[in-house]
Length: 233
Image 1 (cartoon, rainbow, N blue to C red):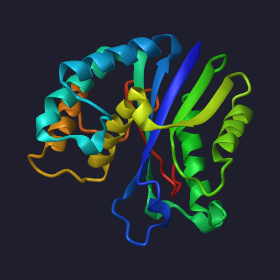
Image 2 (image 1 turned 180 degrees about the horizontal axis):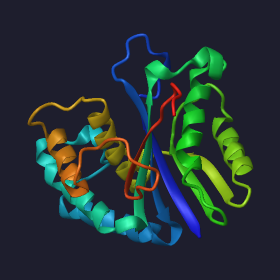
Image 3 (image 1 turned 45 degrees about the horizontal axis):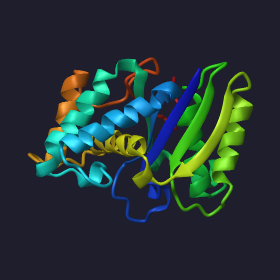
């Protein structure tokens, strides 16, 4: 089976920030069969036309005048069932030891968690194309290294590509951004009472039947992996 994955992140510089604005750095991903990709894109474009939403849509652009569109988008996402899935990893920056485990390199640490988010949803005999939101890296080969690590760890699967794309050129990456924004705002408790964003978050949670929080690995539709870096059993 051929699978496409669209990835985004929030607070990517949180590990090295001297004035952190949040507790959790999140990396998110939207998963689909490649055969469904064009249909999903067409559906989203039709929604945009219906609600007269031009240009790039994303979490930061949610406003009272656009709430109905974002609710319709999330409702459509749910209507696709497990044919369209979202997974994210949440990392508490206070638990991250860059010096001992990541060569004092926050960028290296970031991509190690990127690997963890993707790796556990890769299945044998499938083929994957992974698209990441374009990000300026200190080392230019980070995505090549990520692809190599995923390949070595999944010898019975095929990692065709791990490449950067511009979010404004991909409505699927924009949808990933919206879902990640919903998860991040709840995990980081950054919602303002009676705001448009809170309304969108609550709408998604009503469809889920619970507040957004850590889920078991087997949760397929909206999976939240809150990694514990303090050990335990």
